[in-house]
Amino acid sequence: MNRRARTLFVSASSVALLVAAGHAQDPQRGRGGPPGAPATGRGAPPPLMRTAPRPLVANAAPVRSCESLAGVALPNTTIESAAVDPNTPSVCRVTAVTTHPPAGDQVRIWIAIPLSNWNGRFLGTGGGGFSGGSAAGVNQPAAFGFAAGATDTGHEGAGGGFALDASGRLNWQLVRDNAHVGIHEMTATGRSLTEAMYGTPPRFSYFGGCSTGGRQGLMEAQRYPEDYNGILAGAPAINWTRMLPQELWGLVLMNAVGNPVAPCKLAAATAAAIAACDAIDGVTDGVIEDPKRCTYDPKALVGTSAGDCGSFTDADADVIRRLWQGPRRGDGSFMWYGLPRGADLNALWTSRGAPLKPQPFGIALDWFRYFLTQDPKLDASRITPAAYERLWDQSVEQYGSVIGTDNPDLTAFRDRGGKAIVWHGWADQLISTEGTIDYYTRVQRQMGGAKKTAEFVRLFMAPGVGHCAGGAGPAPTGQLDALLAWVEDGKAPESLPAARRDQTGAVTRSRPLCPYPLVAKYKGSGGTDDAASFTCSAGF
Ligand SMILES: [Ca+2]
Image 1 (spheres, rainbow, N blue to C red):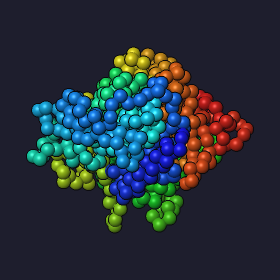
Image 2: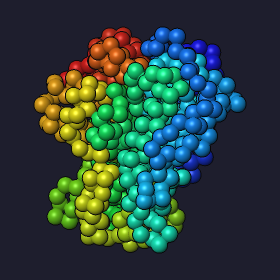
Image 3: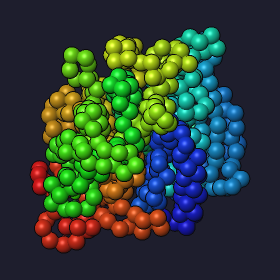
Image 4: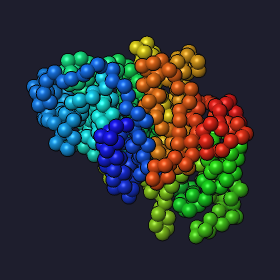
């Protein structure tokens, strides 16, 4: 990375960290962000890429001024501004608004185009929670020479209130803009403006995002397969219509059985599971390499003390077991996955007050309030298990085809030569990791088996990594480099590099992340903090 890129990267990271810190009191606002940016603000953020990619267009030079882009005619689109960034004079910034008559929606689009050293590519970026993306999302990519785009997908802020109009009725245009239309429009506008600026279209287009950004990327592959050559989807918020109700599962369960489990008990249960299962993978490092092999039973905790919370009861153990198991109907049948052993259970299912009261997770509460019941004042604590089942079914039926993002048929994306790298932290505390495995398994079934699927989409699990970042495990680095190498050089990633960093950004542990279902197996010699001591294997 050159000096300017590094400077801009640090600047963008600071913004992301500030945003994350500002959201710390309000978990619903903290999801996702620009590719490579942390969602939780813990530790130093990984860089977007390890090195700036090679330029694809020789001697690329603008054929017009930045300001003249204001005159480019695009369907149903108004260009609000086109100007050189006064703080970053090497970047042209364009803000555009697209609408869909007769709806009066306004999809705001932010495009950044390098005025020099354009690398010949376009990079679309995504958002977090209900937020479609942010103007700052384009900063890092532009610093690496990409023309880049972001969009608010039709509404400001990360809450779900946009789903209702002034009369309290569903605003379907805004729902669709957020679900898929906005990112598609941003992509078309970004590519058109880049071509207008350089007289030649981007040679390749990429999308990168985590959480909602990951969902947006896979939605592009499913619904607009021509938009992107390569898609990077981290901790994807796919299976949206099941995943969001699942996020309220712990609250409904604890209220139904009348046993809110104290935060320190939930934390102690996670710690106990890690202690019990850490060594299964052959390396005692505070990380469960494959939580599917961990069957730790919280019954072992009954009668033991959890600090100020008192002793674990049978009822506590039962709730914890069911949080790990996932929601089930009254008849015991499967609804969805729980959180894996090793993930923080307090992010979604914490309780507060005296007496203890389970606290709803903001994004999920918004889903129930605005999308499912259209009751902005809905009190989540009044949702009975029977009502929960009804709302669950409504969620899937009413919104599955709109924002479910779980269509496994990626034929058109594959046939246009598209490649996708999906990764997910095994200690994700917000989005059930097994939901991503479920989707990938369905893609494999649909697309001709594991081998044929791996020719264009690969899933990498990141043991011990939380939602998009954070946690005890090494987080992936250089996944965008890997995606470019796959798309442009036909070099499929056999593993992804991962690193754990201290607060200064120095690497303290490295590991390979393996394509699912392979796991990183210790070779039996060499340092356990060194990636070279591990190999991808079917088992330990
Ligand atoms: Ca371990």
